[in-house]
Structures are given as structure tokens and as C-alpha cells.
Picture 1 (cartoon, rainbow, N blue to C red):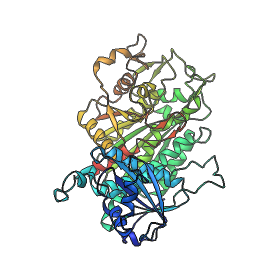
Picture 2: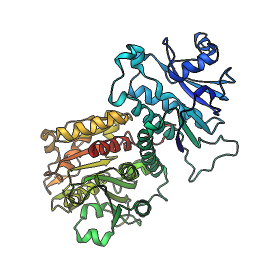
Picture 3: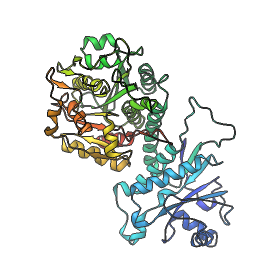
Picture 4: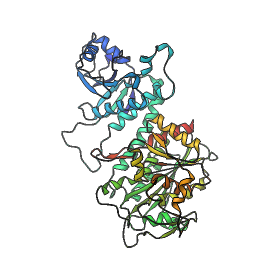
Length: 504
């Protein structure tokens, strides 16, 4: 989708569709007020008569409004001003994008960033809050969320002839001083799109080799991006036995994909993002139930999100050094597959007793974490659809954040709040470590039913002991189950905002 800044008088703009917002029982703002004035109060009358519903996320399409050049006006309900926070604002923008995606129009002029609850709650002379509530942020989020809602999967499913076309371009009612906000939106939208598309691809297409091809594509696009891909032989020389064991039962060979972005001089320590890239997870010998197994194509959501955040960083050309390490494998059962009871020696030299081959994500990640330490990073953040227990704990609303470094955890949580891609911190106390005790190895790969997400993080912590490290379990946030199932692209927003903040 193309993003444009357009500051022409809104009532004279010959747009296919104007998109405005309106609060419950509150004065109209910005372009909405101009439209009401030009129409002789017609807009306010429609609101007063309930022909326009201003309830949160409700959409009303108006046609041929007197005094306005635009063909259509989409009025988005913003609900009660006192409840209108960043999350509700994001949802309004997403709802507008979804409505327009399924409508006949392919262009729109958006004014939703004018919706400032502070001007309703207090005199305008006191000004609005800085930070996530300011105009820069609102315009950025409007663009990102309309773009995300506009997404249609078409790689293996063709659109029907009578389907409405998605939006091709949107303009925003703002001057050139908002260009930085729109640039950020383009980068974030690119990252979300990459992550969403990778997550939705079927596993016969999105294999470890395909992820490597995508990395090559990104490398070719940016002059300051380089790429290393480690195949089985090189991983074996590095003694990555845990990662290799997971991929042993599949004809699709594992890869360790290392993307490097240089936005500062080489002496600057990089941030390292590590992604779990299990492109399909049968559970291995510990075979999963057949029901819903097709959803295990989403088990590479961690890899998809760090690739998306990496591409967003490169697109924004952030002044930061970033390395993205993808542990890509397919977990399949065959005569060569690893077994419960096997003892694996990881790259770190620590031994692992395999209790359940369906706890494979932590095995590929532990070798990737050990490998990542060679870059002497300022921080390591691994991202993984690691545990079903995380979905039980947090549902699809938040990613779990775990770290022994309070400052790093706070930085990630703050980034998630700013990007409305929220995380929630779970404890990583040493109290949980005994659950990993093994009689035959340094540790087991599972800690039992209790606190499954936390003991999985405890396992990973043993491979990042001297690092400023955090673990993000995105099992619930990166895709949605049920009737509207599909990839969300998350937590690209959290990760990219973290990188923006680190870059200053």
C-alpha cells in the first residue's frame, strides 16, 4: 500500500473516501468539525439521530454529503473519550482498515490521527500529552494498522472475480512535518507484512531452505546487510548437536541463518535477535494429536517476527548494529529421528536429556544462543512460539517476556506498550530451576506441567548465563486460533519499537 501526505482542505478534496472519527457525546474535532460546518450541521444531526453510531469501532458510510467534494465519508466511532487510550485508538484504525479492505473503494484519505481525547477532557491551551499519545504516534499507528488490516493472503488462494480489491493507496491529512511518522509507518508495515506472510505460508513452501531464500532476498535489497547461512556440515563442526537432532527426522535439512545489518561503525556492539524457526512441528516421536496439527506451520512465528523486525530496521536505516539469528528446522518422525531418552550434547558442552521431542524449540534455540555470544552483543533477545502453556496463561493478547535483567525487561515492555504490541512479564526465579533436574544429564528438556512457559525460559537461561538476555514467548500472540485463524505478524511492533528506542 502506498502512503501519502496530503494537506489540502479536506472539504475540497475530491477523494474516493474520507475517514474521520467521532466520540460519544463530545464535540466534533478537526476534519469532522469542518465537514459538519460545510454541510450545515448535517453530520452532527446524523449523530444526534443515531444514524451515525459513535460507539467504539462502529463504522458508518455516508454518501454525497452536502458541501463536501469527497464521494464518501466513513465515520468511525471512537466511543467514550475517557476510555479512549492507545489500545482503543489502534483498534479503531484497524477496524477502519478492515472496512475499507472489503469495500469498493481502493483509495482513502484518513483523518483519524486528529482524534485526541485530551482536547475533549481538558482545555486545548493545556496541550496534549507527549509520547504515545502525540500526533506523530497517532499518524504512524493509523498508517500501520490500516495497512495490516488491508492484508489479504493470495499466495495459494486466488481472489474471486467479485471480491473487492484491497486499498492501493491512502493519504493522511497532514503536512510534510509528519514525514518522519510516515517513514516509521512504512518500515513497520514492511516488517509486519513480511512476518505475516511467512507465518501464513504452507509448510511445503515455507521450509528452512525457503527462509534462507528470503534472507538472500533481504540481503540483496540493502547495501549494509550481509548474510551467512550455516548448513548441516558446518553446524556439525560447531557441535550444534541439539539443533541438528531436531531436524534429523526430516528431508528438509536445517539451516542456521545469520543476517547482519550495519547501521553504525563496527566497534558498536550489536543487538542480537534469535528466532525459533520450526517450519513444521509434528512433535517428532512424541507425536502431537492430529486435531489442529495443521496450525503447527505457525511454529516458525518467532523466526518470522525477527526477520520482519530486521527488515523494518533495514528499511528505516536505523543507526544501530543488528544481527538476526534464525534456527530453522522441521520436526518430523522417521527412523532417524531423535527419541525420548536420548542425551544430546549442546554447542555449549552442556548435556540435555530428552524427555519429550515436542519440546524441540528450546533445543534449536539453545545452540543458537550459544552461537550468538560470539558477536559480543549489547543484548540478546530470543523470540519463539515456545509453549502452549503461554497461550493458557495470556491468550492471544500479550507475548510473555522473561528476563533476569529488569532494565531489559522494562525496555521491551515499554516498547510493546508504545507499539500496542504488548508484552507481560512472567517471573524467571531460580525457584523453578530444580524442575529441570535430570539423573542422566545436566538438565532435562522439560520441567513438567507446572509453570511450563517459565521452566522453558529457565532452560534457555542456562545458555545465556553471562549475557544481557531476554526471552519472548509469542505462542499466543503470533497467530490466532479458531475461525479467524492466521498469522498476526507479532511481535514485530514490539521488537521494532525496541530497536527504534535503542537507536535513539
